[in-house]
Length: 541
Length: 44
Image (cartoon, rainbow over all chains, first blue to last red; front, side):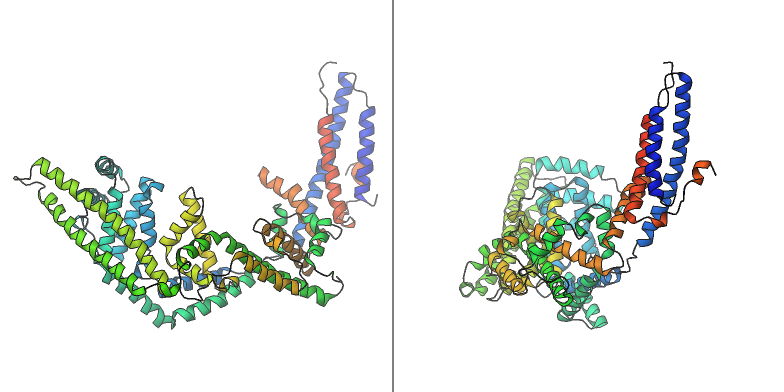
C-alpha cells in the first residue's frame, strides 16, 4: 500500500469489524480476543512511536531561530537611565539618593511586616554609610523611645545578626506606650539628612562629575542617546515570527485565524480599510501595513495615556486650574523657608526636652517619676506636631518643584517626567487616583508608569496638558483616516482599545508570517505537534 | 518483520501536513479504542 493514512483507515476499520465478530462467550475465547487486541495494540504502539518521531522532527525542521539580541541594547539603556537619574535637572540629591522612595515606604509601614520595616531602616543607614557617615545611637534622639529602639537596632545590626527577635520585643514594648514610634524614626532620619545635606550633595556631585567627564555627557546628550537606543530596541524587540510561533503554541493566539478562508481574518482586513484595497497591489498593501504598524504604536501609547488619565486629571485640577500668572513663586519659596525654620525651631525645643529625659538615665538625683512622665508626654506632643509640620513641608516642597517647571506649554511628557523624578509624590498621587488595595499593586502601577515615562520616543505625550482624551483620540483618528485606515472614535474608547489592537495584530502577524519562510499550514502543523506530542511528553517527563 | 508490517509502506513523506496530523490522530484514537475494547477474562 502506497499511502499509510489510507492503510490505517482501512486497517482500523477491518480490525474493528474483526473484533466485533470474534466470539467472547467462553474464557478461552476471551483470552484469544484479548491476545489479539494486545498484538494489534503492540503494532499500533510501534506505528504511534514512529509517526510521533517523524512529526517531531518535521515540526522542528520548520523552527526559526530567534537571532534578535536585545540584551546588549537593554543593558546600555539601563546604564544610561542611571546616568539620566543622576543628571536629571529637576530633582535633587534627595530623590537621586532614593530617599523619597524610602520615606514613602516608612510612612506607609502599616503595609509591611516587621522584617520589611527593619530592611527599610537598614537601607536608610546604608545611604549614610555610602557618604561615610556611621550613625550611632546618639544620632537617634528624636524622642526617648526612638533612642531606645534604635540603640537596640544598631546593636543587632553591628552583630550582623539576622535575628531581630530582641528588636521585635523592644518594638512591641514601646509601641503600646508610643504608637507613633515609626513616624518619629522617620522624622529622625529627615533631621539627619538635613544635618548631613552637604555630604549627600557632594556625593551626588562627585558621581555626576565622574559620569560627565568619563563619557562627556550632559543631560541632553543622554536623552538624545536614549532616544536612539529606544528606537533600536523597538525595532529589534518588535514581535517577529518566532514570537508568533510561541504565541500560537501557547494558545495566546488562534492559528486558525491565519488561514485565508478565516472569517476573523477577512473581517480584520476589511474592517481596517476605509476603501477596500486590491490585495494583489503590493505597493498599496505595503503602505497599508506600514500605516497599521504606526497606528499600533500610537494606539498602545494612547492606551497608556488613558491608563494614567486619572493621574493627569488630578494634576490638572491641582496645578492647572489657576492661571500661572497668578502664582507667586517668591511667595511659595518664602512659605517653604518659613516652614523649614519653624521646624528647626520646634526641633531645638524638642531636643532640649529630650536631653533632660536622656540625662536622667542612671543618675542618682533623677527628676521625679511624675516629672519624667510629663517630659516624655511633652516630647511626644511636640514630635506629633512636628510630624504634621513635616507633612506640610513635604507638600509645599513638591508644590515649589511643580511651579519651577510649570509653564504655558507644559506637556504630558513634562508631567510624566515630573512624577518620574519625584517618586514619593507619584506614589501618593497613584494611591489617591486609583483604587489601590495592596503595596504590590501600587508598585505595579508605579513601575508601569516609570516604563511609560522613561520612553523618550512617545509621540502623543508631546501634546500640551490642556489636550483632553477626546482631542487626542480625534487627532489619531483623523491622521489614520487620511491614510485609508478605518478607525473611529468608538474604537479608541478605553474598553475597545484591546479589541482594536487585537485586529491590528492579526493583520500584522499575517504579514510577518507571509514574509517568513513559514506558511500558515506549517505553523498550524507546528502547533498541532506541540499540542499532541511535545507538551504531553514533557508533562510525562 | 511480521506479515502485517510487510504490507505497510512507511514513507510518511508522501503525506501532507494535514494528513500527517490526521494519521497520528487516527492511530491514537484506535489505540484508545483497543484499550476500551479489552474485556475481563473471568468466568462467564
